[in-house]
Image 1 (tube, rainbow, N blue to C red):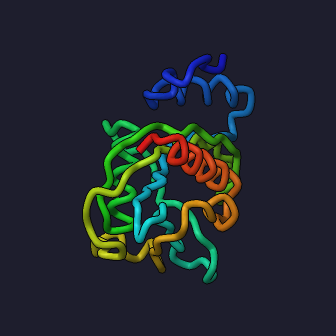
Image 2 (image 1 turned 90 degrees about the horizontal axis):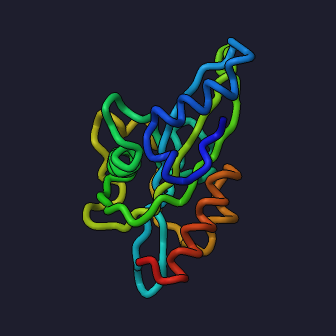
Length: 174
């Protein structure tokens, strides 16, 4: 059965167990666990967040940095790593924002994906200074106004989490 508390989502093993239960009736599902970071900072008196245009996507398509959880890696560590790799800046963990679950098809295989989102606060670095090994994944990186995140991000789950990040900032979480 589905975990009943947010704490149950802290370890990937529990996520996999829930995904297995959900999808075990249909052996064509694979499972992926990923994390995204909503990295925010105050710039010229307003809150902004780091947005990326993934490589190969049309101009104007904005997304959040994300990636699969590495072997032995905790979900919050994945969010911090992916933000650094895809934006060039470092952040510190503030709070987990929530999870999004969906199914998609890749090369004929149905994939069940769980994405955990974290609110991160900028700590250092220069936006766009990407490591050479990941620079090909990102076409553009930009600070966007946080209040525009729920409208400007391309994907529904990311828009929802940007709205949660905005609410957290407005409530004084930072």
